[in-house]
Image (cartoon, rainbow, N blue to C red; front, top):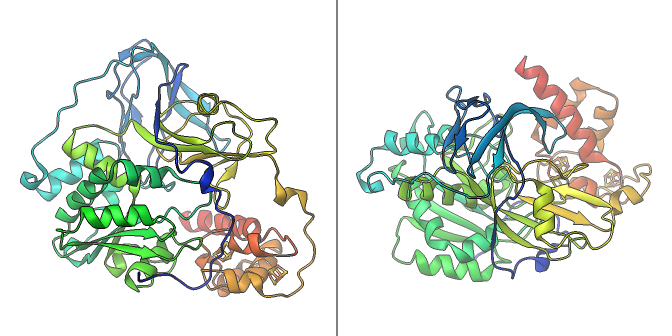
Length: 438
Ligand code: SF4
Ligand code: SF4
């Protein structure tokens, strides 16, 4: 089997055995359901309901407020209790629509449109926009914008990111095993948008069952290949994935479209299939609830807006007190301090660990071992960048290509001195990106 990969990277403990063999389980929220109006990059959606309105699952409750914006749909039936700022996973207060869930789960009738073969390019993109679809791997970039490059004829590859390289996460794995037809169907729809493009399903080789299944399903599809990528973190990071799958390189100031690529993750492609073929807007997603502090780790099909506290209850609660609870994976996720916050379109996982090994270790001085440089997929010098960041030396940080960091966390992971390299570099990048926006 050919192995495709990139330079750098690490091999952390993957923890996937905890949840990978459990079939996806549907759960329905019981408590109130909260829909932040900003679950995507771009302008927050604009509420089209008012306090006291009764709504059904699948009903639009907020419309997009510009090109880089998407609507939000109710995922349960109930009454609008309030429209007010609510806390989200990042700790920020975000204007949200709160539904008093009537637990009847009554839904609008979903009406599929014309078969995709009969739809024009613009109709497919508009349908994806109207369905409220965003990058569900965590980025939240509106998918219709990503699918609208200036020159669609110059797109050579539509890549589906099936790597799922973050340790512990298995939601994409289960989706690929349980609904591979929808994934391939979604990719075929995306390929209709780019007449010269070839489809690539890029899967890490620690999922041989998915590789085999997808190869079988696409045997007759000359326009689609399945690529087995070497298992290595961060194989699923956009730049590394593009390089491993096509040999093309991008830097921080380029878009994948600049090298003829469009990349979407598994859940997003399935959402595209469901929007076009089934007429369903984005109201649910798969979330991995896992970690050694969770009683019954597994994957749930979650109605968006369900509180994380309900997910942990559905997984049997905690086995003792978790030392660390993370939203997302251990490498790129962030610590959660309150479980009473809503899941959103970009919620991939809830990870609870009995030991926070990182915070248990005191950072020491750099011993110049060079391991961070070797592991860095961005080909920068993390130890040096962290020093510049610590001193707020913007000029030196930029001169040393600090913006090429993809915040993957490899350097912090590998550093024997436990220096908070990623943290320092990330803070500096955030500052510089905010300056650029101004
Ligand atoms: S400097 Fe950035 S890209 Fe390089 S290893 Fe650290 S976090 Fe990853
Ligand atoms: S891995 Fe840590 S100790 Fe080694 S060079 Fe990098 S910062 Fe220094």
